[in-house]
Image (cartoon, rainbow, N blue to C red):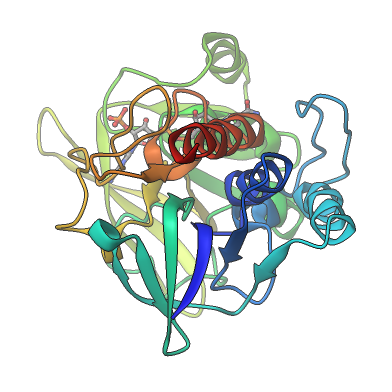
Amino acid sequence: MTNHDVIIIGGGPAGMSALIWCHSLGLRGVLLEQSPELGGQMLEMFHRVLDYPGLVAENGRELRDHFAAQLDLLQLDYRTGRKIEEVDLSQRRARSGGEWLQGRGVIIATGARKRKLGIPGEERFEIRGVSFSATRDHSLYAGKKVSVIGGGDSAVQNSLLLAGICPSVTLIHRSDKYRGRPDWLKQAQENPRITIIDNAEAKAIEGGERVERLVIEDTRTGQIKTIDTEGVFIRVGVAPNTEMLRGQIELDEAGFIKTDQRQQTSVEMVYAAGDVCRPACLSVATAVGQGAISAKDIAISLT
Ligand code: NAP
């Protein structure tokens, strides 16, 4: 068993910020990231990052490089490729690589992943017509007829991006209430290349070698309709990475960790930061702030 002041689980922006702040507050922190590299969802940001104050980056990976360089400069203890095998939150300890690490506090920063629909064809056609990111894949669909599923900023933004290079984009949403920015939705409604279908649920993605059709059902009438499409972009939000914590900590109905304003969870000296606790604004900036708040509150509690 090795002892640390703070065990940080997850190496996205929340976890990296928490580690930096532990250092600046005189706490011995260790960060465990299961992937071979730091960054978390930053590695899936393929657009130019213009909304992180003080630093403009060509994409999330470049922004991540700045964060990682700071960890190295400060010689902080982060370990990549370290999957957590077991956690015992009430005892503030975690097992990784067969070794138990004991903390005085724990910060969970395991983030979230893109939600899937779980419909027939979604998995089968991944990278053969099904995509989870237009910012990454849009150039592969130039000149093609495509569909986008979802009603948040991601789906609307992806539709607008695709309409720049595709002759026809169909945006399908399961209700008629959009979570996205009204000005983006207005742009989509006014774009002659975008057709919006409300109150429709995607039921199946069909085709041969590649995607050819999307089957949808009208949620009010139950009527089934088939749309010819060569690409289906699925942008239906995110799901939290909390499976390993179930039964140990209070989660909301969607599985996100419940926290108070100081990022404290239902377990004493266990904190959560970043997308795993469903911040009101999912962003690198929010994750960084919550990582800092967590470290600060642990420092106060330990003195
Ligand atoms: P979101 O805001 O959570 O929206 C998810 C959408 O998917 C909702 O319309 C939801 O419908 C729908 N949905 C969820 N599960 C579904 C299912 N199983 N089948 C069909 N539809 C389903 O997610 P997001 O658009 O990915 O955005 C996530 C966060 O990132 C938001 O805070 C957003 O503002 C932010 N974001 C910001 C920018 C930007 O500022 N540049 C760009 C993209 C995203 P219901 O409403 O019916 O639940």
